[in-house]
Length: 275
Image 1 (cartoon, one colour):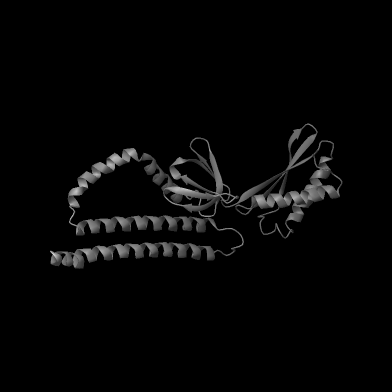
Image 2: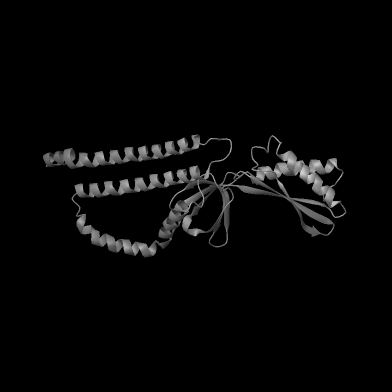
């Protein structure tokens, strides 16, 4: 009896143990390689103080998906190998597995939908690692933050407060990418209705020209901010709009700095902003 057990341990048992060890090592190797590829893509960016290019963000998302798929295939192959070593009739399990898969398919439609939606998010380059997005989920809720991970099943967003949203891809109804290619900083300047609009426009044009020489804005602006003119008229207030094209995801920083310059410029000319 013990001879048979020892022989099983030295043959089948050793094979199973080696397969498990190989799976653990291969999983770590795949994850290490994916992490190294992501770091290399980040280092390859010509200007790391700016933002990632669209191709770099897409490549990082694809690397993450490929690593997860590779690990899934590895686990499946090793499980089948171990089943064969244990003498389980793998071939005879194909038909029951198909029936079970069909039954699970009806019960796991949400999971299938998540995977299909994630596939199209990746292939269509809707957003990638590092993008600032706002996701509208089924039911009317929204989730806004920076993309930290994109897999075939979920998208993870980190908010400005440090919180992390995990959104199943199948629940995403609409994806608003706030950092694709370029963004717009929209600044509405409320001034009293009694103010001279021509003088206000001259001040804002001077602010737009000065913005291209500002140390905090010159690396974030794609071109000189444009004065759009009077946007709306309210009781005792006229809103004048400025629009600036910025690097992806930098519209909020640019908007804050432009408002500082606008307030300083109006004060120098004795024009008070509306309360």
